[in-house]
Image 1: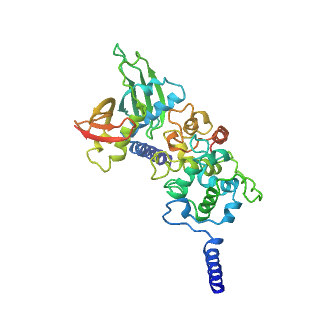
Image 2 (image 1 turned 45 degrees about the vertical axis):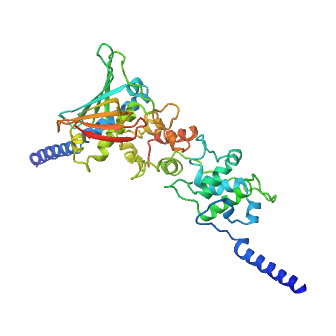
Image 3 (image 1 turned 180 degrees about the horizontal axis):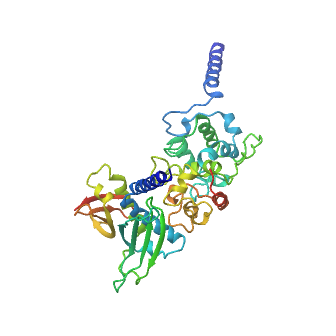
Length: 195
Length: 237
């Protein structure tokens, strides 16, 4: 009887862990949660406020899980690079459901040439850009690859139609094209294009 | 001559009776109110209304969750409410843009009571010298989810944090939803690091809630302390 129960238990455990893997949040959601986590860490004064005001990129890596408790994603949030090319970064590890497990600060030199954002802070702009992906991936086929295959996000300031816009550029491993989400300075959506 | 006087008398009596029947003790709300004069309220109701009665019956249930200490139109005290009488008349009685769309509108009785107060000039105490009603008993916030949901979440959060609201990604309907959220809205036993508490701190939060631009008044320090107590006790249902 014991010989039968033990293998059965193992089989059940393995299928449970696969079920967990299957319910992992989408990469774009993990990226969006990264910007929320940055805000939380700043609010808790665990990292410097410049991680919000000078936020530049979020790069996401899906991790191979050996155990159920292993992190599912590593998100690297970077500020604009300093004059010597180095930059301040925070690495955040997330579980399958997007709960932050741990973080690690990698120090570089102070950000240089970071744009001045007159209304909404970069973290909010990034969130809003990513919300576009989260809200439209099911209805706009061309957006879906950026939800399921998200690899990075870059925030920059640009002009469009004679006025300033925030440009959220998103890359995906599922397509050669990039998604550009244009936001007004108040964070509201203006347009998007894929090129 | 006598006949003329008699006719005039009969006409006056009929006119008065008509007036009493249709206007005396009853109220009427015009569907398309163009100005305050078109809202009919009795002289009696104008004479007996007071700020406290309006606060108890209209402002507290329908207005003060937004128009409290948010820094805009504050209806929580007489002086401030009285100073905004024109705005109240315009937004709540004439254009009827308040309460804002999505919130429960004023019921007929509430509308007419407010109209009587505004038309009476916004008196603090009844013009006829009758007693001012006592303040409505204030429901005290308890460190229990039911109380927090009723007095804080329903009033100040759900207009955005409802299933089809713009903040539906952060549901606040049950303690478990808040605990399970990847945003760590509630961390049982750790109020200081719970998102709910951090966001209610208008001075230090990067995204203060309720958003300042929403016009909804902030949660008071005493209320935040009570919510903290609930979280630190385990955030039970």
